[in-house]
Length: 166
Image 1 (cartoon, one colour):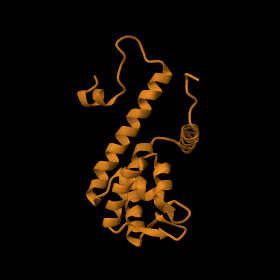
Image 2: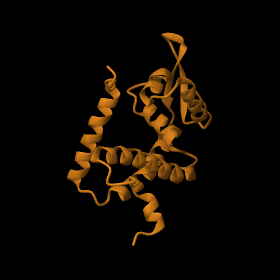
Image 3: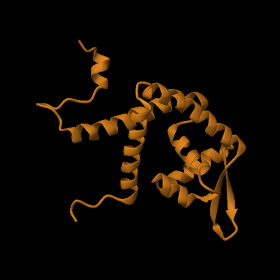
Image 4: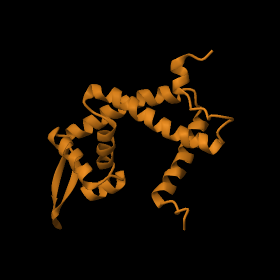
């Protein structure tokens, strides 16, 4: 017998029959992403962080050099004003700094501070604990395959999917 919590946490069931595998995958991708983000947000709250800050800090941290806010917004697929609010918050907390672009006074370059480096490390230490627990029953080969498949999906999404109406 399945308890109520376990039943609520499983994939939804169709009204009749079974979902086709592709539909199950669509639902699973959405649910896994949402639940993973929710779990991380809950765990990161203890250090006054969250997944949105993790994404922004990581995008800046992993840029080859001081990168413009516009480029970071593009990489994160978010609107400029949304990123501006996030950067304001990260800057206020001393995690990033805005630097003047010598080639364009209107542009600000972003750089992670020492405090930001430490926060980034702490965020990923927490994420690693829960990632290990999530994937503990997968083999190295399964993890490699999952990385390969998710990477291909991300590449396709980044390249832009063709419009079905075209």
